Length: 250
Image 1 (cartoon, one colour):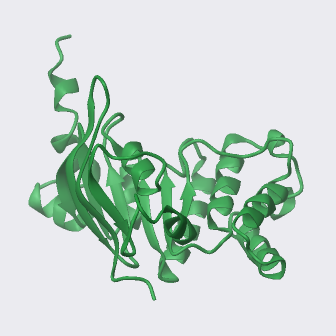
Image 2 (cartoon, one colour; image 1 turned 90 degrees about the vertical axis):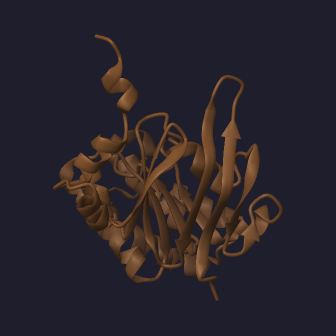
């Protein structure tokens, strides 16, 4: 059974030669929670996701996924998580269906179960008619949708979605929202990064806002709007972030 705390980020710091990407980040995400990680470009969102997935090592601090230390239990962690990266990671010469099948086989999903999973996923993301077309013929939005199916083919407990609806048309975006809501109803823990504040406000139980690698706010969208006396989450976001940009001389 999945731990009550799906993700525990403890004093997480990541520095590079010329910059600090994350500075003493502390966040706990409950099992079954739909959590939004928000911040301007360069705030540290993707770095956080990469560390949570074991793709980067932190400079200091630790991350636990369902009780497993990411640094020491990477193999077990990878069985528990699904990752939809910011840029689609697909083979353009394969069809959409073949891409999902390939990644399913890498996760050792049994063939009979994988077939059912893939059919259901492709239907959910609205690509049934295009599933047997090569990905090179897909639009950017279609590639992002099949990328989401790749992340979900092994039925992970925790799903990382790094700007999954970027550059999508409204219809595609809402189709992905429906998939995300359905996953959450199934009890999946979802960590979502997005620049669309409406998306975070519509979907997320709680959001953490980071700026220059530091956590500046953490609560539900409704509580944050009340706390900062703003009508929308976007207004809260603007109030709390991007101060350096606004103060730059023109």
